[in-house]
Image (tube, rainbow, N blue to C red; front, side, top):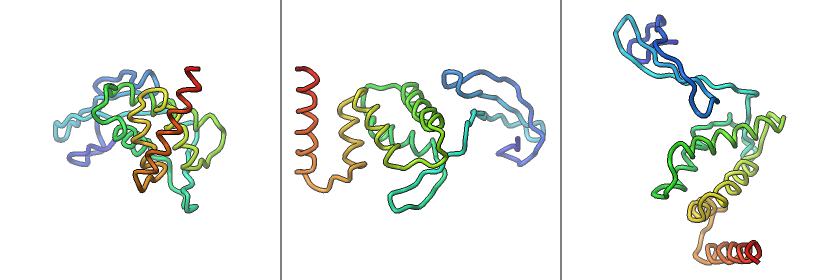
Length: 156
């Protein structure tokens, strides 16, 4: 592992421990050349995933982008950071387990919507507003009306 501070290729692992419910290994490293310390994470990847966007562009799956979009929806909501990591891990595992190397952005968005709907209704609406590209207040009203009807069905 190359040192991010001085570029030396001779770094040493000082400590390793499981992270993300065992889905990753966190390693504390030090650089004998410059004395800097830094952390790396090692994750198991079952397969390389490619996201097929709505315009048919193909981009590599980016778990950090997924985590950022979920964090934005959950901003100022009573959900801790560990929960966000578990959500991202769960979605990534589901995608890898499906056996396809290409997954549509729509499928990923639906998985996030499904998870947020169960977790936090405010985050669910926030994510939906971006994901479904609400442009006017009536788009929110229609979505919230449908959400209210499904809640009535769930409770009835």
